[in-house]
Length: 147
Image (cartoon, rainbow, N blue to C red; front, side, top):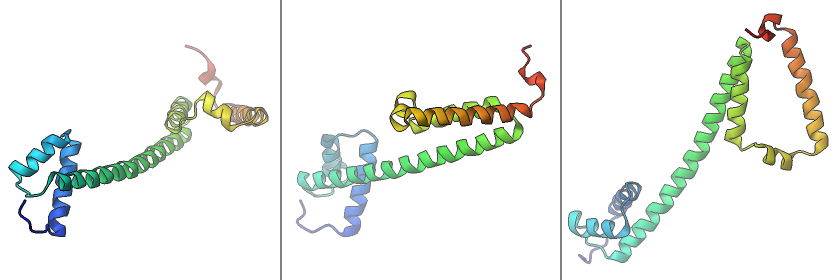
């Protein structure tokens, strides 16, 4: 320990380095050895523990923000593909996209049962049936014939 106080820039740089080491799978012991022997930070193990705690908080915050952004981006991409599939009349692709969205949003049968009442399900089924009939009415009969 050198006895001099670290600057804010040094603390920031060290915390960023510790975050990088944590992401790369380093444990506390290896990080302390790195700080003492390789980087020669001249700080106590207690200070390194504080760097580790701060780095973990940052990693968690970054992951939470990335998760939200990635979820929104994936959902937006699926919506764009669905729109193009409907415009192209590709109902198989549209159905595939709906299934992917359902998985992404965690809307399995059990979750849906908790969200909607039986009356809601009946009403939704009626709307979907009418929508499917309307879509099918515009398609040539050859689409429905098996090869």
